[in-house]
Image (tube, rainbow, N blue to C red; front, side, top):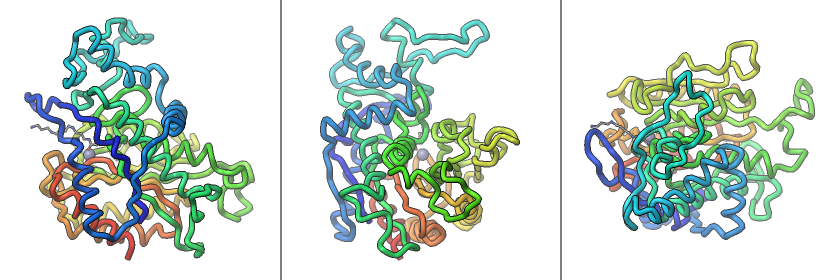
Length: 387
Ligand code: SP5
Ligand code: ZN
């Protein structure tokens, strides 16, 4: 597997309010360090450590504007320095929101507060999306990994060996070691450790950089006109529902979002099976599939949901697959409640890949917080994927 990593992703280090305690965030640089160490030790994969150039960073920000408001991106970039200058935070501290934006009938045109101290609550939905001194660099490095992963799968990329291995049935895939993760974040609210939706940037990259001929469907089915758009299927395997990703593509008939996640768990307000896209006859009706699973569920129960998910992805006939890969489904995870073991990830990887072998895919890392087991869990998933 080609695996992309950028050491700048390690620069983001913050705190979170969990329960009633302010603690070092579970989403920490040690996660990526542990994964990289395990990959190196295995000697099995094509690990490519890259550094986003100034041009890459500019490009990532431009691509992010398709997903996030400019006001939001500017806030994430500058708020730490603004707080520092106003004496609101110490050099090694973190910016956290105090008061979240209110949705009242009287303030439907609510603008970002002028007060620097108040603004983080406008641009976040929880207390696990703190911003530290170098967070922005890590956030952009993370987003750039998803962008570069997509570039590697584009048919015209000079660095690509094309999206297939010469065999039409065996598509390529690339894993991006994104950190911070992305799936909780949409237009202009950070949350759940997420600031930029990395998967969405990969999709924007495919759309933006595909040659004109590739922007049409791969199928030779004459039913589809030459103007039909590229189709994307997102498979979200993180323990938590990817509310941000769902929100971004809810009305988009060319993007299928499928998620298996802990029922009634964080982020609490989304992820119900009834969220199936806009009502018919909207063309996006049915392009959202939530498969909530009861906490405490076994891997057998998980597999039943996975088969439903994979059938939906197959039926959608996407040009590209995006996998939001989280390891907080692990039985020991402090933020997850499924009974999934290390060896199960091999089966999971194999199931996904064997069902979708013909679709080129970007796999982006999302959650997973048992740092000293992350590497082996990921290696098992990849081993299954590459059987
Ligand atoms: C990317 C990702 O996995 N984000 C998850 C963020 C979850 N943050 C809140 C989790 C709340 C878990 N329950 C709190 C119990 C407190 N004792
Ligand atoms: Zn998660």
